[in-house]
Image (cartoon, rainbow, N blue to C red):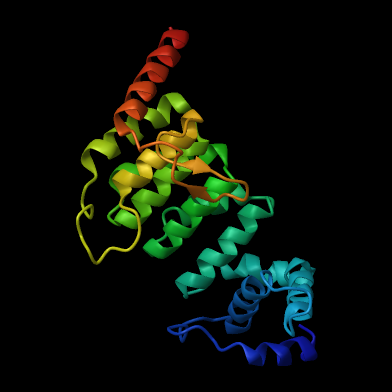
Length: 234
């Protein structure tokens, strides 16, 4: 990395808890790039973001990213895996499958989230497994969301079951993210291209539907679609 670019990264502190990171400079570079990408062109750090983007795509940057998926620090492993998947790097499928079995739930969560925006067909079996059996409710929810981009005939039964049974944190006031049962409903709505639960907007965001949230209609439509698909398979 250019010494001036490395010096500019001094404006960004190392993330808390990153003492075990073997490539702290790479972690700081990725985190700083994530911050800078949302800045306006007249921001003092906008140009830094442009330079970091170029460096992360360079031969040196990509080499360190590929090495980063083995880093002892979970956040860097996950971020490096995400970049390799989004860039469709050779071996991205193998990397994704390996990281979907990472011992750190934070890594599995991030890779599931990445596969929602950048799906890989050979990860479908593992996503189905994680949605149903992962110990972390956060990972189960992220895997459910990724199923919105998978095979309907395989995803619909799993998402319907999660809506009915995955209520581990539904009523926990300390949980600030949507529980798996709610995420499964959202994923099913997206999979069916309906808006019984949410209205999806450009850029990957969503808002409440124009009418009331109707889970019963969503389930009814999902069951009809599943029956149609199964009849076609006969």
